[in-house]
Length: 64
Image 1 (cartoon, rainbow, N blue to C red):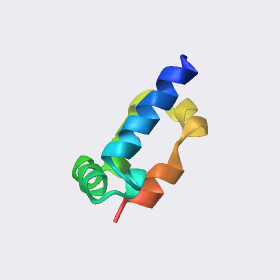
Image 2 (cartoon, rainbow, N blue to C red):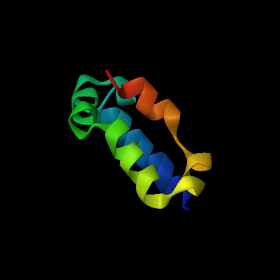
Image 3 (cartoon, helix red, strand yellow):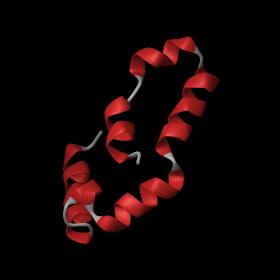
Image 4 (spheres, one colour):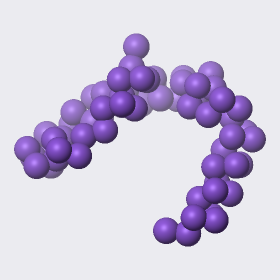
């Protein structure tokens, strides 16, 4: 992974969406994609071993 490219992408993202994932456009986008349901489906399809890699903080913070 190229850390410089990653930092540049982060900078551009924050320039376009001040506040990052709290920006209203991003919040609306996340709601339309139902991350909780998508995560549950991915875990179901990958099997029980996927539970140890579960990313719960993002889905908990964005679901309403």
